[in-house]
Image 1: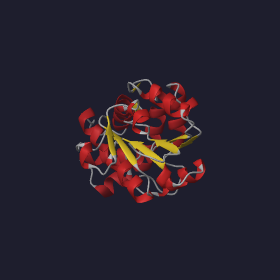
Image 2 (image 1 turned 90 degrees about the horizontal axis):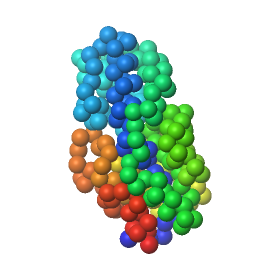
Image 3 (image 1 turned 60 degrees about the vertical axis):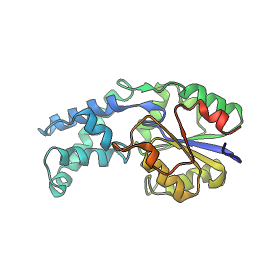
Image 4 (image 1 turned 45 degrees about the horizontal axis):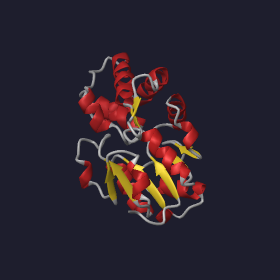
Length: 223
């Protein structure tokens, strides 16, 4: 059990929604526009989690460009990626089992919820709305909402400020080392889901207070 929780912050990609299909389509269409080699889904899974710009840069380097060459085409790649992602956002993704029920149970406890993701805010808001999850959240913050992104603790600290709760009383729920490191640095307890994306590494190796197989387990965890 985790005692004293007054609010919950929840990650999006890999925690609430399996968005690998959206990333696959948008990223490979972008690479095709640039006449660059495509990227397999298994490689994309290892690249996601640190924001869209990192994903695009990683894909370009995976296709044979060195860091300098990748940065040189990054602005054009970013523009094409935004257009493609906007067109497919939510079409090739699915809400993980137990997510809606888990969020409902947390809300029934009177806990304010915030979604905090490294995905650009506009894409995050649109995805939550399309999947019917937006109704659960008092606040939604994306990778462009603050000066830095997870694993930096700043987004968590600012989200706690918006929720009006101390970090020690605010549970972070995520799927990756980014979430774990940000939570630890901010002083938030953290529960990590055993599915999702963690750069190809076992999630149990990331610092955590609890591992859960579904968001429905959170209700009992906080009892």
